[in-house]
Image 1 (cartoon, rainbow, N blue to C red):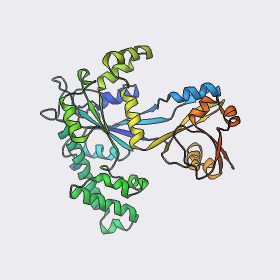
Image 2: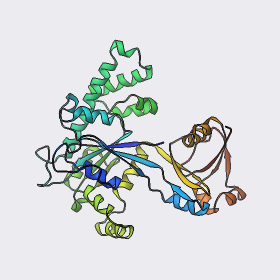
Image 3: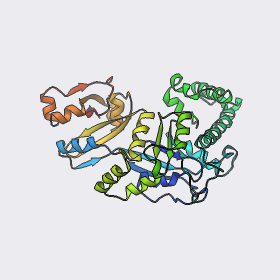
Image 4: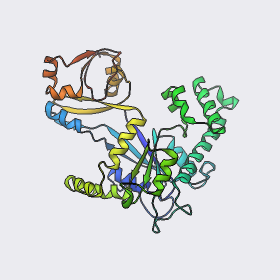
Length: 357
């Protein structure tokens, strides 16, 4: 399965700079004026996973295929976007298409980079974005719940819409919906304010290790569970280096992981995703699945016929595959299992599917 993360925020907070760094491109124009980005830019990148190299070496695979993630650079939002201010309507329509949101928050001072607000205030900036999304949701929900439209909507979707409207109208915690409704139904609702979120505090180089007063203010209000401190400028610099130079530079400035690695790990966490592998002489490949995915559903990620005709899954954990040097020894040493339709795939499983066509 493929998934998209949309980079959102006010104008001139570093969205396009981060997008170019993540996708190692100059696809998004980054300039010092509001609404530099109008139409969204999309980049598809390979998800780094060192386990692939180890598997491919043992299987003597001809090629390695990573799973992928898409990043979308979305036009900046301003107060009043839900009523069409700035590029509001475009912004909001593009957000509906992504699976998770990366909220880019300005946490740096600069006389050279314009700020659409009179001062730097990350808490206020996020409130502007979230308020506009909630206002857009309210308008959308009210239209969908009108008598003429309501009759064409699934009852569970109606329940979700009514619950979200109540939460927004009465300032209740909207996150409770995750425990009350099916994830697929929540996604089908198309609502903006319930999308999973990652907060990225964009800082200058001096603040990359310990943050600054702006990141502290933000974390005091929103916590650090889904908050990352990243410098979009540094990420761009890292992309211009070879592996040896990159490692040395990261040690000098005191960072252990790139922004890309941190964002991918956090995206997998908030979207509740896992990875399984297929590995043989032709290729070693990574596949993305939802957590608690059954073996037939995992097989369906490869081809729908695999799911329809599923019989069994030959299954080895990644650690057993490596320690037993591949399929043959794993089977000989009793580390390969035959799993049926009810088997829930674990992250890192190496699978070979048996199926009828």
